[in-house]
Image (tube, rainbow, N blue to C red; front, side):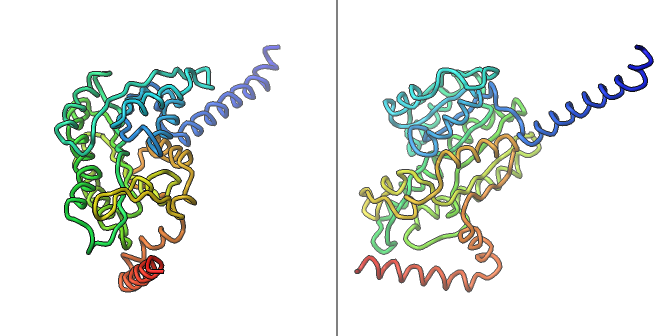
Length: 311
């Protein structure tokens, strides 16, 4: 028996175990790092992509801190999350909620303190909250431009800068921002929104370079249109609600699909992720490689939109 094991079965068994271990290692590398037990903060978590991110990260076993302006809607999200994971090996936690308005920087500072009181740390900050805009620059009051910038840009960087020192101190953390394809290209009648997302892209590109030495990754995710209520809640030039579900939004990506992409980006510590169709992605390169053509295309788009509106 010993000769049989030594001569044939034992090496075969050892080889099989080695192959199995290698397979598990490769599988883990493909899946990326686990977020099980990680403290994940999600802003704008009461609806849309933020709500879907809450579901995805909860299912992955993260300890969630959900942020938003409406306590009732946040609590509803918490109640809709399953009490246990489909994977029996993954423990799930009841999320915490923190209520504040991203446009109020003083409230953001207080919210950061409340966030840290939950677990004493933040492993992943997902800056998702934001508002959209539809309007003609000539008919848009400067206060509307400021309001969009306050939420999408200043509120986002205020929360980031409030939590960042604690990540630096621990040499641990991950900062994620949900930007937009409009943070890379600007399209007509979206001036306030595109400007806020361009500013966001620039800020987090700078931040990534500055804090790399602390082993804190920064991920900018730039989706195209997502099937949410973003256009319904968009503001217009006079500050009123747009209240229209754009065709591009109605036919956009499933927010659950985008949320899975966010989880994947976190696991793989991706730096810059574009989640858009072929045309918007091509436009990003066109803006850099052939700007004259890009500008002509945008001018043509603006004329067409104005004509459609007049008809």
